[in-house]
Amino acid sequence: MIKSAIFDIDGTLLDSSPIWAELGERFLRACGAEPRDGLSDRLLRLSLGEGAELMQRDYLPEMAAEEILLGLKSIISDFYRFKVTAKQGAAELLRALSKRGISMSLATAGDEELSRAALERLGLIKYFKGLASCEKYGSKHFPDIFFAAAQMAGGTAAETIVFEDSLHAVETAKRAGFAVAAVRDIGEPEQSKLRRAADYYMNSLADYAENIDEIIR
Image (cartoon, rainbow, N blue to C red; front, side, top):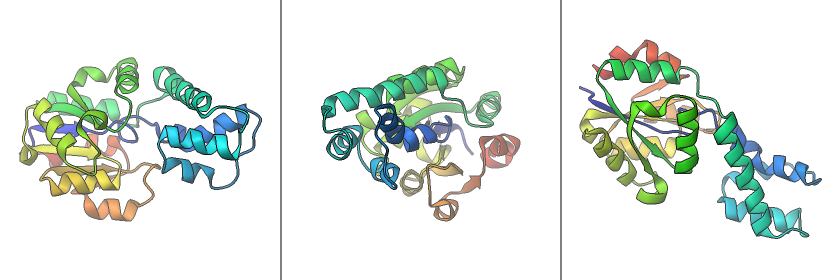
């Protein structure tokens, strides 16, 4: 019986994957530089600092990498604070879980302050008892962040379902004993593997909201 739930934020609750896919290209074009094919794929494998160094080296030698990094962070901050939207069905699913007495928490690899700001603006933060970040608990390649989030929600792994969009996070949560509900997002290219790895797989949170009683029984 499911008593608690953990939600990933980027790509699961928030429709934020596009900003990360477009970030480098958007910044370069604003600076008058034309990005080459494949840049976005390269940047997605790097940290923001590493990406700034790459863009400085390959596109903007007249700018310091620190200046580029500040510019990237400014775009991200503006997006989360004022523009990012919730994924389809997010509010409906959270309301449905709350009505059924399911305690919820968050587990994110993103920036905690910006994540909270976005969820507050969208009226979703009220559903959660806590937020565990990779900055504090380590990468989602390891289960510590999920155990911490489960504790915040007052549940054990066996009583908790994790909502995620990333294959590596789904695999980690499953190995740690959690039930996992995967949701489709453009940020994860391995959708067939994601479907096989998770206990449940649906195209949207709205689909989960419609079928929630079958999942938490």
